[in-house]
Amino acid sequence: MVQLNVTEGRIANYLRRRSEELGGWFGYVEDVYEDLLADGRITSLESIYTVLEKVVRFVRWLRSKGIRPEEIDKRVIREYMIELRLKGFSATTVYTYVRALRRAFRVWGLNELIPSLRYPKVRLTYRLPPPEVVEEIIAEEKDLTYKTIIAVLYETGMRLSECLTLRRDDVREEPEGYYRIRVTETKNGVERIVFLIRYAGLLRQYLITNKPKNLLFPSPNNPSKPLTPRNIQKIFRRYSRKHGIKIHPHILRHIAATKLIREGTPERVVMKLLGHKTEKMMRIYVNLTAKDVEETILSKYGIRKQQDNGSKERIVCPKCGAINPPGARYCWRCGYPLTQASALSKESKREQIEGIIKEIRELLQKKPELMNQLLQA
Image (cartoon, rainbow, N blue to C red; front, side, top):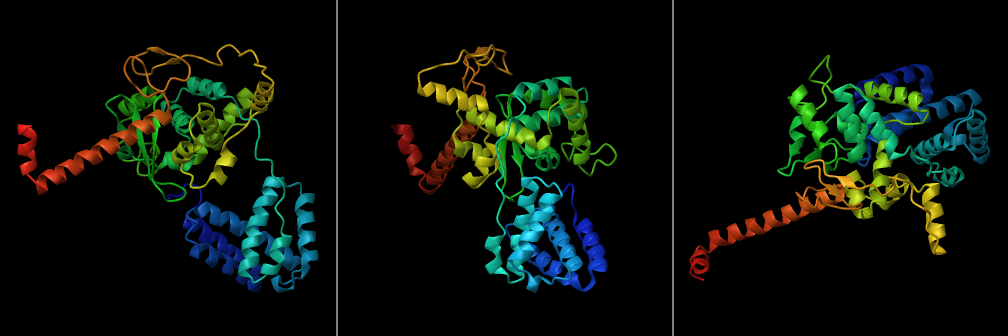
């Protein structure tokens, strides 16, 4: 995966500085680093850097106490966990420390102490900004490049790094008018296909106006390199202040997943669109709001809350402008897919048809007499 924030050079410089700082204690950090490099499951340099930072801080703390890793016991673990909490770290931050230290303990041969490193309870569900706010932000943004990036993140659920490393050849307009996007630079190294349907017109306008050649979103200063995440994050900080909400690029991924689930998209399809291999990650991204809980409980007693105006809006086809009923998967007039799931279904059917055609061609090449029989039938 192409790394936008963390590079191999940055990690090398970090390790060199820590080697000078820690001296003989640096060997403990180096052992963890080598273990990270040998782990084929880790493809993100950012993940490696995060673990190293946590381990370095722990080794630095041990050195200040005069405690070698082989001298660690439950008392030392308890004292360090208390210190993390006294520093005001959130449960989510402490969780990342525990995860890093569990790996370090395994590398250092302290397996019997790993159960003492307990994960804190992290509240994974929280109230997300409503989709209407994101759509308002897209409408407000004046810069066509940033406007398109926000729209792509919102509709496809891509990670920011995946979006910024897209190439022009990864984007293909289908005959129906929507875009098929091939995501190659993924976190887990597995390619996937997503679709831009609602904001297809915006992407088309961007392509016609900016005419990207190699990278889809190149840096204006160096077209051979992608836009940096900081540029996008700066835009989101501005909108966070303006709208008084917490919003950043990765939250759009949560919103996209939640929106797909609420539209009735099967979880296996959502997993495929987001690029997750296990349902465990789905539990993180699928958000259940207080309103969902309330409606579920009331429905058990036969109570239906009055819908807010616009909660069951009709869908306007981005291609022909026809008005479709709520929940429609395809436009009644032109057949344009209206959801990610329907576009994926159409893609699967096309692949099946192409496979059948290929098999027929191979069969006719092996047995050309079949063609004569078919023509005579």
